[in-house]
Structures are given as C-alpha cells and as structure tokens.
Image 1 (cartoon, rainbow, N blue to C red):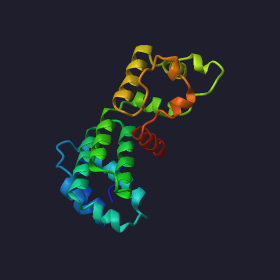
Image 2: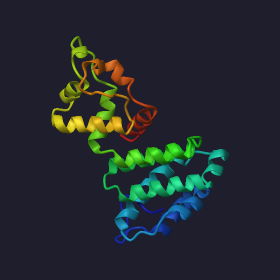
Image 3: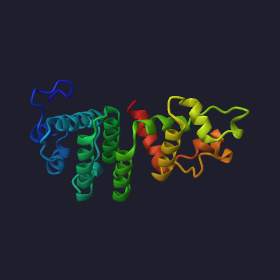
Image 4: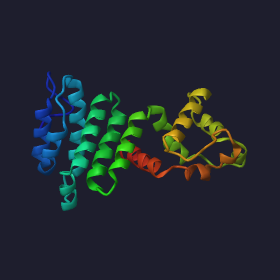
Length: 216
C-alpha cells in the first residue's frame, strides 16, 4: 500500500490509487477506476489518495450487500467522480477530511437521493474555514440572562472576536443562503435565543456538523 504520509518523489497516479483501493476494498475498485481522472498535477493525486486511504480505514470492517450494489450504480459513480475532483482541488486538509466523511457516509447509507448528495457537495465546495468554526458554535452558545437581548451576530462576535463584524455578517448570511441554517435575520434580538439557534441547523447543517465532529 502506498503511504499517504510519505508519497514517492513523483507522487501517485490514477492507476496507483485504483490499485490501492482494489487491494483493500475490491468491491469499490471498479467504480474508482471508472470515476477517477488522470492527474497532471501529482499534488492533486496525493490529495485524492489521502481521502481514499482514510475511507479505506473507515470501511475496512464494513460489509453490506446493499452498499456493494449501490457503488456500481451510475448515480454513485457521478457522485464519486465529483467528490474526487473536489478533493483534488482542495488544498486545505480539514476540508478534505469532510470529503472523506461525506464519501464514507454515501457508501454506508446509500438511501440519500442523488440530487441531495450533489447539493451537499456543492455546499462543501463553497464552505470556508471560518464557516466551519461557526457551525459548532451555533449549537453551544451559552445561555445567559442577557442572551435574549442580544442578536446572534453580537453573540457570535463575542465568541470569535478575531473575525471582524462585517466578515462575520457575511459568513452568517452565506450559511443562510446555502440553507445550512434557517435564520433569516442575524441582527434581530428575536433570533438571539441560544436554544433557537441550536435548533436552527437544517438537515444539511446537522449533517455537516456531524462530519465536522467525526473528523476533528
């Protein structure tokens, strides 16, 4: 097996990565072979290898006839190809770990509709590291006697004083636009209840938070 921590001087290529999967998860290998693209940049190949190595570790003891059939479907192969492309282009290791969690989840829970999976991949691509900092904070803001008199923006600014107000406002609006949270006005005290904020995560937001916690 290729060592993801110590790749060769030239790095892996698509055939190396497919062989890696075939050795560990032969039932997944054909789909990887059909979905993976040749790499002009070996750094990108190394990123894909890193993600698939982690998925192999996650699924080494996993067995499911349903999943083994699912990974052979055209829909899964499209999802897999998109995951691998995005992982190859992603320089940040924390976000690549989210792709690892997404892919393992897609294989082990194959009932998610194709359109929702592709939508989630789009959201993952759009997320920035500061979004990932804010997401768990929304579920753990402390309750206080004055909490109801504060806006969500004010509460989060206290938690993250290093993020300027204007940028914080933009990040929160983006989370709403991406349908990660269901908060329409981050500057309203009516939205500043910590319990309401904990419940503001959409199904997409809860899934992303689960991926984040699995990989940190």
